[in-house]
Amino acid sequence: MKTQIVIIGSGPSGLLLGQLLTKSGIDNIILERSTPEHVLGRIRAGVLEEGFVQMMREAGVSERMDREGLPHGGFQIAFNGEIRRVDLHKFSNGKQVVVYGQTEVTKDLMDARLETKAQSIYEVENVEIHDVKKDTPYVTYEKDGAQHRIDCDYVAGCDGFHGVSRPTIPDSIRKEYEKIYPVGWLGVLSDTPPISEELIYGTSERGFLLCSMRSHTRSRYYVDVSLDEKVEDWSDERFWDELKSRLPEEVVGDLVTGPSIEKSIAPLRSFVTEPMQYGRLFLVGDAAHIVPPTGAKGLNLASSDVNYLYRIMLKVYKDNRPDAIDQYSELCLRRIWKAERFSWWMTSMLHHLSDNDFEKKIQASELDYFTSTEAGLRVISENYVGLPYEEVE
Figure (cartoon, one colour):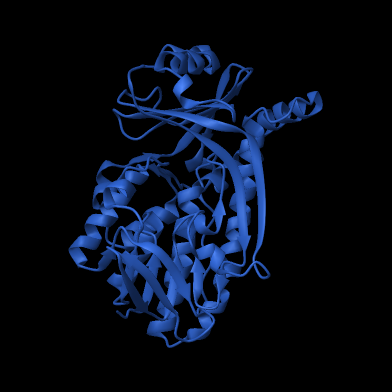
């Protein structure tokens, strides 16, 4: 087989890139080790920056998102028993976010790919990337016991932290930066109405909390727990009692509880690899970077990578500019490190990561300052709705 771009991974970043390329007449094939059902079964975040929303519209897959997504012009931060609102509209020049689950994003993109008849090959094994430092790279894989080869111009590694793309870059060239946090998020998904029309991030004597939603009838709640906790030790009753103990009194009575339909513990990690390009291989999304979910940057950073790679490929194929690929890593990483900083900062401000009394006082002071001053609220708002994408030269 032969194509212009092989995309490894059919999560939202791979599918979005594939849809944009196909719409622009650039041939691509997606390889995925899992089944479509498994990919759709992943429960992930659902707060979309304006940049992501615009990318979905540009890809022609925004109809359901525009109809069912929940625009949010603000969110709330709870601490010291009170709640303060971050007015995104006011402090980010009218911008907002849209709450729309990653599962729904993935489904919309899968449906769109079926309509275009672009090729996706699922349940592949032993994917290997070859000769990306040459002009004729290729990818091999196994399917149903047979060996296959795809010749291509470029390879997009959208295959996540545990995929094959990042290790393809030699250790002598690849540098990795990582921070492991001493807590994880215990999350519960329930078919209950949200406690609030806006997300509530919070911290209390007992720890972090997040009240989120997927729709007007489906809610997603989190509390932080130590890394030695087991999800099977958390009954629904225990979870709801713990969440109630962390909520301010003014909203605890609004919480509607019910059976969980999904429950999991996600460890918190910050991770970046540099460079994100090696010859004709490009790392996209979690293959190159991970953020703690505080601040909702994971999926949105993947969209940022897709934006830059897609526009670079337009330069390559439409303007005959193969030199344009050289700017990919630098463009991506400038935005990534700013989002990593914001996610680290929000995490540090809302979690009990230290028993040091001085650090606890600093944390309380930061929360007070950044939620009570115009300068502080502008910093939070501009980062939360997403920093602008740079132009590709």
